[in-house]
Length: 156
Image (cartoon, one colour):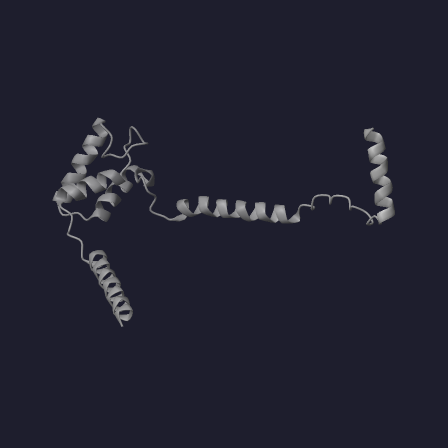
């Protein structure tokens, strides 16, 4: 009886933990502030001078100007997509640190999968290594004694 009660309590506890986790994960997120949007957009745009850094990370004058323009567009009511489209129209698709199309992300994955499959096919087609020679027919007792005596004669 006590064992069954402990099981039920454990199941109820697990159920409550799952429900609490679902509530935390599914609750609506607070709308980002204007400053958070500006920072997030700056992190998505490539600096035209540094090209390896985002506008948010770059100290150059061009990055400062782009951050100012982002703040101006956000303050003017532009959506995130409109801000990104504005800079893509001005600088081209390369200004986005993450490509808009999933193709650039899929190509390396496809190449990796093809390489693994090719390696697997090559390993399957390779000729098997040469088998070790068989031990030959089993020796009878008389032959075994003779070989033993020869070996002892060599040791002497």
